Length: 176
Image 1 (cartoon, rainbow, N blue to C red):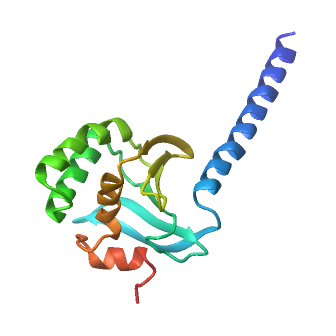
Image 2: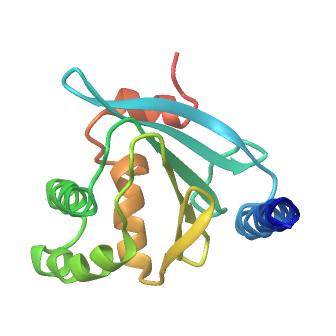
Image 3: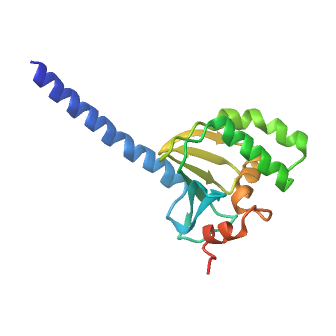
């Protein structure tokens, strides 16, 4: 009886996991149809590898007028508070908005971001209507509706005032 129960439980769990994956894939496919790799790059601070980044866009052609996704695969354990503070620091460095505006975005980022363990990945899916959907390891965790905040976040990697131009060139498939 115990074996039969364990076998049945195993089948049910297996079927449950199988069923969850297509639903998550469908959500991502809806947000980013025909996604193909545009480019990829590794972000390092000094000698420390922080994350690998990949940019995806329909047919592998990035345009700010079309949906696109930035995937970060973490090579370290990244705590939410550190992600938020680094994001704020970059926004201020880039002068993405007034200091008061950036500070007003902090609570939104604190509720939208999560801890990212080493080996996990986050997708930042930007749609032409200005929304930013955050997906962690295939699960939608939040949607940022504020188009100015969404753009400020994405400009950290894709905007005109990036910290590392070679990183951006590789990410956008422009590396030589």
